[in-house]
Image (cartoon, rainbow, N blue to C red; front, side, top):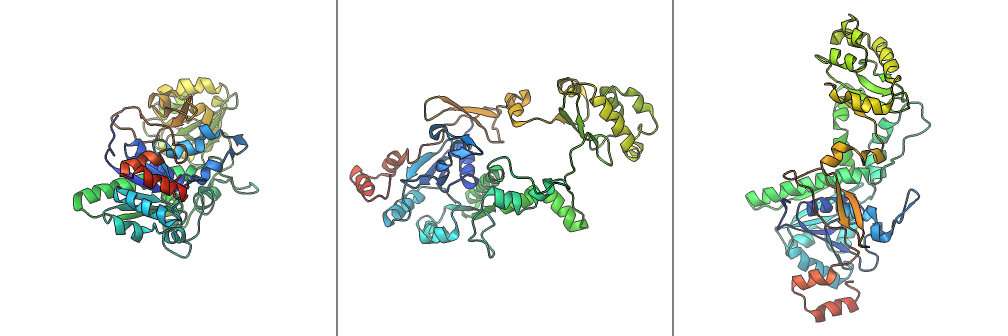
Amino acid sequence: MANVMDGVRVLEVAQFTFVPAAGGILADWGADVIKIEHPVRGDTQRGFLNMGGVQLDPLRHTLIEHPNRGKRSVGIDVSTPEGQELLYELAKTADVFLTNYLPQVRQKNKFDIEHIRAVNPNIIYARGSAFGNKGPEREVGGFDGTAFWSRSGIADTFTPEGLDGPLTQSIPAFGDSIGAMFIAGGISAALFHREKTGEAKELDVSLLSTAWWASGALLSQIMETGVTMKAQMPKSGGSLRSPFNGNYRTSDGGTINLCINSPTGLIRDTFEHLGLPELADDPRFSEPRALFDNAGAASDLMVKAFAEKPFAYWNQHLKTMKGQWAPVQSLPQLLEDEQALANDMIIEVDGADGKPLRLVRGPVQWDNEPLQTTRAPQASEHTELVLIELGLEWDRIEELKAKGAIA
């Protein structure tokens, strides 16, 4: 496997998912990521053992495994002078310092940029936050459910008119996992810049900025035209402008999504696949402009066609259609998606209990090779090993343990 970050050391002082997931991606790419955790509590997220009514096994804690696979964990109490000194010793050996602690906490515990750069001027300092490192709310914390989903307008835009309230976020760490890729990409660019110029950069990514970018096409439209969009209540049929864009219900309650944004050259093929070849010769539908002008009539006929056969039939039959379409799948169905599996989307590691544990690989693949990584560390699992690598003698390690500075 190509370890494109081989030789890069990342010192991560972060918890939950947003920023640790960036460290997890860098570990996937071959970086040595040292995760600093409290020597008693560990990452606060380790205590999240019930997610949406699902009980999680501490030895197979998927909410810890997803953002922390491939790392090493060192237990240090960074609120103590001894712990801070040890953090600085580790920072001297690192290329990147990665954190999501609030600025007041970074200042109190002396690991803000000026403290870390004092011991390693060439380190890249990367921050993740809820709302950004500037402005009146820079000291306010948040999660993806607040900063990415609710405040950003995403929840409102995804909620059809007529519902009593906004849709709730039903995928844990959704914005966290998206934003983590931006942090990993920013760090990669900063490493490249430092290699070319010798200059070490600091970088910031927030959950709110992640949502802005994810919504950027629509936000730009709103700024330009003042016109926004809202999700529509579910129905079987095409959009108001095009019958080739919409969700169509099958005979057994499944749904097929058509997304043929440009029907030029695809009208006959599409209608033939739907069992409606005669419509390709109907002047109401035979050319794109006529098709758009008579979208409702075409949609009604297509609704009837889709409703005559089950989901499995359409899911197979449409594979030869030239236009773009997709089955509307659940997440459990996605786990059996032949195309996703062919592209190595699932990775397997040995869990802390010794049994295989399946996780999701990051979206980047190198040289078409499956990802090879290890499970997330148990809290403070590698403390002694990393400190010995750092050159500490056993006497000092025992002394630090006795003072509670390390695990």
